[in-house]
Amino acid sequence: MKKDVVFALNYALNKGFQIHPNAFEILEKVEIRDLEKVIRDIVREKTKQKVFHINQEDLEVFLGLKEEEELLSEHKILSDPTLKITSSEGIIGFGALFSNRFSRLKRMVSNRPEAKLLKPISSIIALKSDNDVFVCGLLVERNSERSVTKLIIDDPTGSLESIVFDKDLQNIAASLLIDQFVMERVSLGKNGGFIVKDIIVPNIPDHTPNYSKTETYAVFLSDLHVGSKYFMEKELEKFVLWLASPDPIARKIRFVLVAGDVIDGIGIYPNQEKELVFTNVDEQLKKAVEILEKIPRHIKVFIMPGNHDPGRRALPQPAIPKKYNLDLWNRENFFMVGNPALISLNGIKVLMFHGQSIDDIVRTTPGLSFDNPTKVMRHLLQARHLSPIYGSQTPLAPEVEDMMLIDEVPDVFHVGHVHVVGLDLYKGVLLINSGAWQYQTPFQASVGITPTPGIAIIVNLKNFKVYRKDFKTES
Ligand code: D5M
Ligand code: FE
Ligand code: ZN
Image 1 (cartoon, rainbow, N blue to C red):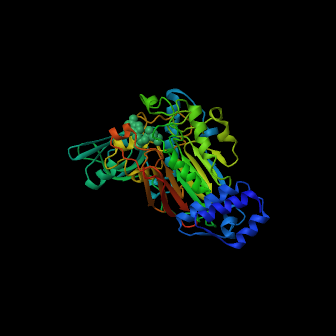
Image 2: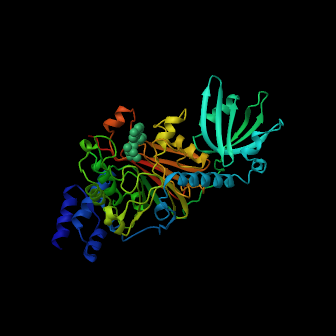
Image 3: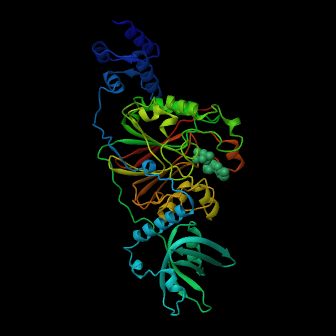
């Protein structure tokens, strides 16, 4: 028997394992590179499972010689801003952006019965009759004072101020995001002002999701923050090793999606240098590649930028540019996408977005908080827009086409940024906030954000069954 085979077998036997004779047959037939490592991995995994024998199947499974089922892993990038970004500049650009947002959302609601009755704002300003009329526009302002709410909406023809008295309607008004598209049914009040009778948001219809034909699994991650002192390197390494292990679920994983903040970046917030292990972007990305390239090649990895990654800050963001790291682009199982992106995995449409807009939305919308990110995600689907608020902290680029619109109803909506795991189902759409791989930073502590890091969200694409796997080490 070859020396390395003897060594590997002794290793397993010393750990108290029995080895089935059929495992020997394989070892004699197949030339196995890194046999020692393979045996060690099997021993580790089976020890966890408290099963202390190794047979032919264990070796076959681990060496990829056997798949009990052919698992589909087809992908298509349906929409990606990277090549569409025009970087138009100035006020004219923003005019074009908002006019595009307005007209496309108006078209989106055009099959609703109310849409037939829509009037331009300019034509109703001089309204004399007290019949109800329908208008639509982007919400520019919302104020609540005493027991009424004032709304101002703009369409291309003018601006309309209206008042909401009804309590339920006021709650709906409070849930609207600034600069989102909204339809209103209004009537003329006795003192000449417009009174809101109904508020209609674009929303998504009840959705019947697409499922994968085979039991292929996908893992949803975000906010690795490689380069930060608080990056959970050990935990992410453990996750990557698990992907290559004989664990029955790990063996079925064919997709890994990373929703931004791959690295911590530099100059992202004041005094960040003090919290970095690597103080330049190149080194941080190199480290990220070092870890991610251990993901087995049969798993496709989709990588999106966040506000900490290089490229540009304003939304939509292009994929992390080649000039920062060519290895990310060259590896055959890595797919670099912009933010946001729509990706089909075995026919399942996954809308991916880093989630920068959540900060502004939480700050301006009553009832929302960082520790319930999927509630914010519901609002985004209702507004059919990923980042409506303009002029606050989330920079928007003056693109001619508003690429932050949610044109298509996805099957899975995957967001990151808040570092808190959130799972929900909204009208048939699976909502995932995939948490983080960074411990709580002093800044997050100071603003009361308590992350839930080190958890991988794993989804069986055949039935959308979701698993949370915690990789946090005890320390
Ligand atoms: O964002 C991580 C989390 O920290 C996310 O919930 C937003 C929050 N955050 C980040 N910067 C700010 C500021 N300036 N104000 C309030 N909250 C903030 P990350 O993108 O990973 O830094
Ligand atoms: Fe982050
Ligand atoms: Zn972020």
